Image 1 (cartoon, one colour):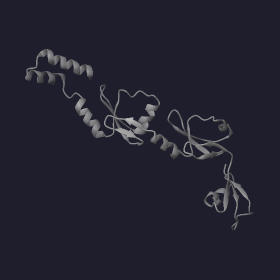
Image 2 (cartoon, rainbow, N blue to C red):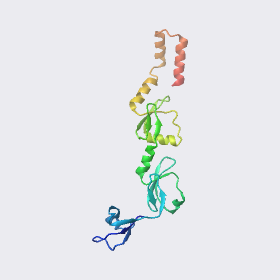
Image 3 (spheres, one colour):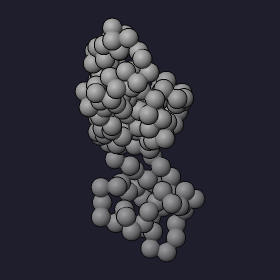
Image 4 (cartoon, rainbow, N blue to C red):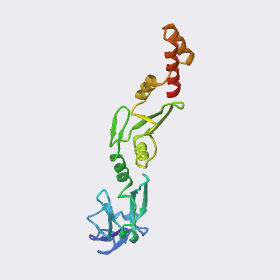
Length: 202
């Protein structure tokens, strides 16, 4: 709850020293926070100082970055005086989301992403060479939460991912490999070993 005291009269303002709160209907007709020369904010008891350096009061909304990497909000009350909050606390959703982005540090196949939320192009070699898209923020959340991403490869551009596929994905059938080896007089033992290796890897 926000409270304001009238420190300078104006037509229709009422008596000097009048106190209003944001719980009354007239509050949003007056907008006292827009006229600090007329209305003085009466501070509530401070309960929490947010991670972004703002003092938050009872009845105000704050935002929390939880251990599961989600941003949620709640209204501050006396229970929170004892530190009954799990996660980083912020004065606004924008501040909480900026904190998430500023924490990003991911090593991709083609670059390192730091403090940026950008599109990410992922690839799962073998098993069909699945291609997906995500963002560096979502990928960072998975890493922070301990999700298994070891089998995936991540790129900052679709072109870099396509180049990797071109270089590593098998493009020839077993018969094509055999024909190429025979044409080039590759000994049977060697080309059978090549085919076996390809099947084991892909």
